[in-house]
Image (tube, rainbow, N blue to C red; front, side):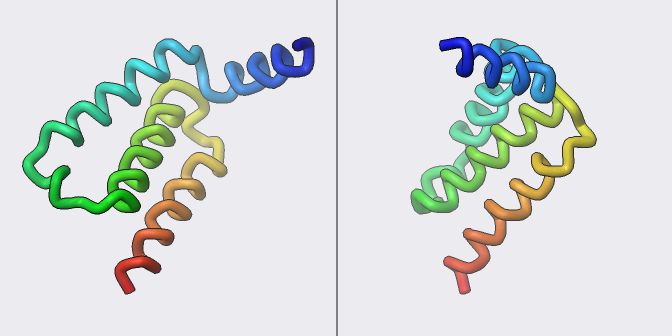
Length: 85
């Protein structure tokens, strides 16, 4: 367990408090889920948007200059672009 606690502490410093991140991310996801376009999406597109919401939550709650968060968003969108092609 000490290793897990160390990982969580490190991530908390990078991404902020988990509870606050969860509130931000769930609000974004709820907004997406309550649009008329949500049901038109297939599973990969829904997952992509939910993962982007997760990354946005981390950016807003934690370190907005952490490059990996921004690169991850590009990665998820690229996965959908590849599927659409």
